[in-house]
Each structure stands twice: as C-alpha cells, then as structure tokens.
Image 1 (cartoon, rainbow, N blue to C red):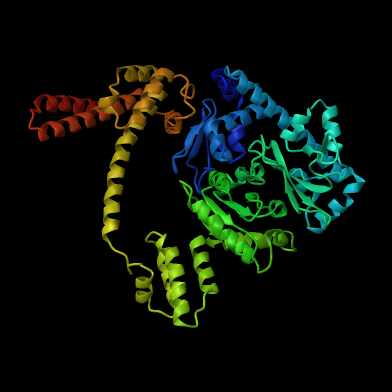
Image 2 (image 1 turned 45 degrees about the vertical axis):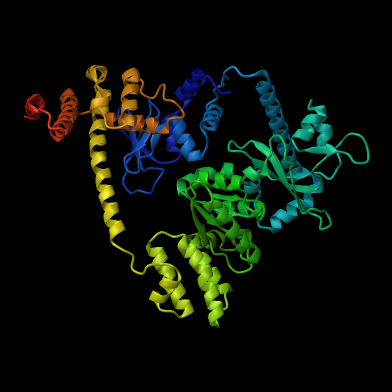
Length: 587
C-alpha cells in the first residue's frame, strides 16, 4: 500500500522549496535557479550548500549531503519517505491518492484513522479541561510549582482528565465512535462492577505521546493524589500505541536535533518540557528507567550523537549504563555522551531554576564521552585502598577501554586510571590490554587507502562535471548522453545510473527519482547544483570534459593492452587524435 506517482509529483510541485529550506538556514540568491547558504547538516563558516528551487534539489559540496525535496525532509525531520510525503502533503494542502490496496488493508487503515481521530479529539478535550475546569485547580497549581509555563505546556498539549467515571466514554459514543474504538484507542476499559465502559484516565495530568507528524498515539497520565496508584499510568499497548517504540517529545525535538547533530535524553515528562522551556529544543524523554531497543533506534534516527541527562543518583547512573549498552547494540550506534547534573538534582529542577537557561547550557557544554564517565564511575565506586580493590577496578576499567579504538581519548583514559591507582603508565597500559604508544603501521596503511580513495574521487569528479555540463547545455548534452558508452567511460554503477536517469529526464532531472535510491537522488542533486553554477560557461567546456573522459578511457585501455602484451598502436593513434582536439579547444 502506498501513494500514486501522480500524488508524489503534485506534492513536489506544491512545495515552496526556498521557504522549506529557508526555515533551516538563511538562503541568498546566487543565480537564476540557485540559492546558497550555510549547510544545515554540518557546521561551516562559508556557504558550500545550495538548492535549485525549480527542481527542488539540494547539495552540500562540503559534507556531500544532497537529494530531492523528500530527502531533505527525511534528513531534517528523521522521517521515512512515506512520512515525509505525508508531512509535506499536510503542510501544502495536497490530497494524496492511494494506490489500489487489499480490502482488508483498507479496512485496517480506515480503523486506524478513526482511532487517531478519536485520540486527537480527546487530547484537545483534556487540554480544555486543564485550563478551564475548576476541578483542575490542583493540576494547574502543581505545574506552576514545577516552574512550567502555560505557553510551553500548551505546546506539549498537556491536559487534565476529569475525575468522573465515564466523561470521555459518553462524549465519544455521542460523537459516533463505537465501544470497540474506545477500547482500541486505549481510552476506555470494561467496567468491573457493571455493564459498559469507563474512562481509563480519571483525575490525572495527561501527557500525550505523538508520532513524527504530531498525531496523538496515546497518553501518559500522572496521579495528583498521593493515594492514587499507580503514580504513572500509560495507555495500554494496542492498535496504535506501542511504548517500546516511542520517545516523548520527538515530534517537537527532531528539527532541533537534526540541526544540532545531537539529541538530549532525559527521563520524565516534566524534564522534557522544562528543557524545551529553557531553550534546549532537542530534548526527548525515554519515560522510565529502561531504554527499549525500539526507542534506541528512534534516538539514533534523530541525531548521530546522544547526550544522556538522567537523574544524578544511583538509579540514574544505572539507567545510563543500561541505555548506553542498548545504544551500543544498534547496527549503527550513535556517539554517546553524559551530561553532568548537580548531585541529587534532576533536569527539570536545573532548567526551571533562577539561572535555568544559562545553567543547562553550561551542563550540556560539559558533557563528556560515555567511556570517560564510565571510567570515572568505576574509579569512584572502587576501593582503592588495597591491592585487591585496585585489581577489581583495573578489571572493570579494562572492559571499557577495550571497546575504544586507538585514539587520544583512550590514551587519556589510560593515564587517568594509572594516576588514580598510582601505577606507572606502562604498567597500567599493560594491565588494561593496551599497547603503549600505539604503532605506525596501521596509520601508513590507512594513508595508502585514503590515497586510492582520492584517486577515485578525482576520476568521479570528472565524470560528475561531464554530466553537469550535459545538463547545463541540454541540446548538446542530450546528444552526448545518447551516444555515451557508460561501461567504458564511467567508473561506478552509481554514476552510470545517474547518466541513464539524465538521458531520460534531462529537462526535469528531479522527476522520476526512485524514493528508495538515496545515493542516486543525492548525486543528481549534486549534478543539478553544479550545472546551475555554469551560467558563464559555453559548450566548448562540455566538449572538453567529454574528451577528458575519452582520454582517460584510452589511457586505461593502453595500460591493459601493455600488461597483456597486446598491440597498442591503434589505441595510441586514437589517443593522439583526442589530445589534438583538447589542445584545439584549449588554445
């Protein structure tokens, strides 16, 4: 099940790409069909990022990020293609048409849509109750006592469920929803003492959990009365809510997380809200002390670096150890850092204090690599007064250091352990299983590998330039592409796919890009942005780059022939002819 190609093109046409990208970075016009600015995907001081507003393509010549309008939203919002398409359709008021789907799948989707509608309606009701109902006075006073402001609470759509047994049930049934839908959405449960349903949430603060598009999937509910147990009650696992896959606040944090390249993980609802209120917009909550694998995967999609900012007590320390272990187990684990909190405090207390914004910013600036924090923790917990205790600390720290590659950090941690245990660095390194001083052979091998990579990059760069000139001069370029022998002239399958795509879509290079081929869309974006910078060139440049590719082909053919002891005279004569053509174009 998906959306029609026509729907996708309608969304692409509707998007104001300058407006979309301009919300992430300041853009300046640099030509008829080109804008430039600082790259939103990496830190830079001079602009290397550009967009084509008509083709809706972007490329950064600094970090290599690039693609079409859908890829831009996928990257900046950490969404999948379908989610990005739906988000843009919502934003630009485009109705999406679905491809034909199985009747059962259609029925399932329609039910899910109704459940989401019911949850959305109920979330709005809870918000009104919090700010308007007299019975929510204690809830408002509690939130104020935590230093949380109404504007921020409204942004997170925090609400209050009235204490009546069936207020939501009666209102929802009256609006046309069924008992099955009330139970399926997690808003109601069968009554124990009588027939019918009762509200699952009564007399509680309501914190909605939302998906990447901000659609409510379920609720976390905090009790206000001390004798009302449990203290926290979640929506039941069901058709739309799966706690193990959700992070609290991700729909509000993903933009800031993508821009910062980092996401801050805290534990509770008020921690997340307080940090956002203090300007830390890339904070999310794991909700509980155990990070699930699905939640870890969501974190890794938000940003390449995760800063753990859990409570500064023993339980918080154990939670960070468990969270880091889950994150390390991912196929592509993010960098993990630890944000130091004052002893006995939680993030919300710091963020809502007199110097909240300044203090939280300082804490984030003092975040340390997880390995350093783990070493410090082992040293602080160990008994360093005797040989046996120090041996146990050595064993604990060696497990941490063994995970690290040869690096400055690893050497620093070896010195740290040696100093705290009063050992020589050589003895500590030996005990920790680290060869002191490292070795030069791996570095030389790496340098050689990088040299080969640079040579390949130069060849590919020439091929990219040729395709860009084909696009800049479409009349002559189409003839060149039609006559191109991609296997002989182009070095990689990706470049050959790009040439084949341009051969069919030279007038509209962004159209027809497959959503599941990110490398191709990225390369096409780079070629388009290169072409837009060639406004002052002429067709002789296209001829020159084509001849350069042909010359490189002949050089490779001659080298192969000589290695096989085959005659090279014909190849050499053709090479002379190509070089003469190049000289003619140059002079």
